[in-house]
Amino acid sequence: MIKLSKTTEKLVEEISKLTVLDLSELVTALQDKLGVSAMAPVVPVSAPAGATAGETPAAESGGNQTVVITASGDNKIAVIKALREINQQLGLKEAKDATETLPYEVLKDAKPEDVKNASEKLKTAGATVELK
Image (cartoon, rainbow, N blue to C red; front, side, top):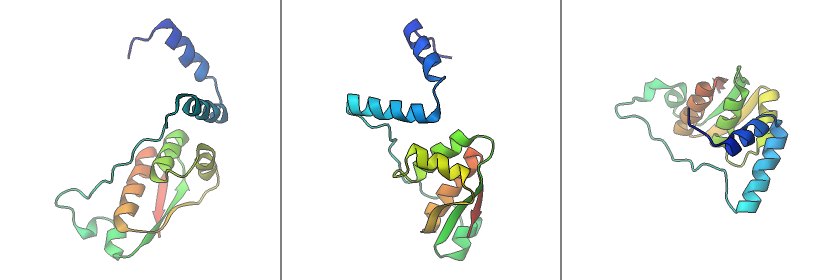
């Protein structure tokens, strides 16, 4: 655990009491005030060396597929983060709503490598994913 100053500890304590909507407003206000963006850059991930086409259902079909979340699991926050990482145009509220209105179509007619990456991120976050 990192040693925090008393001021930082107080801020963390107060921020942890905020609702998700309040946090969203805080992030937006800080971005505007500081002229920065909280969006993390997304680096495309290639298939691991030695991967074969038969490793995923998306690769087996050879065509475009759709990624659908059927259950968000116990850690909704991680699923929301994964959704926003997959689709950077998705706002915090939209991502939250997506985890509450299931099934939710994450990607439609996507390339096999995009399908694989998205499904891995969502599964890692705890979501149940279906490929169509």
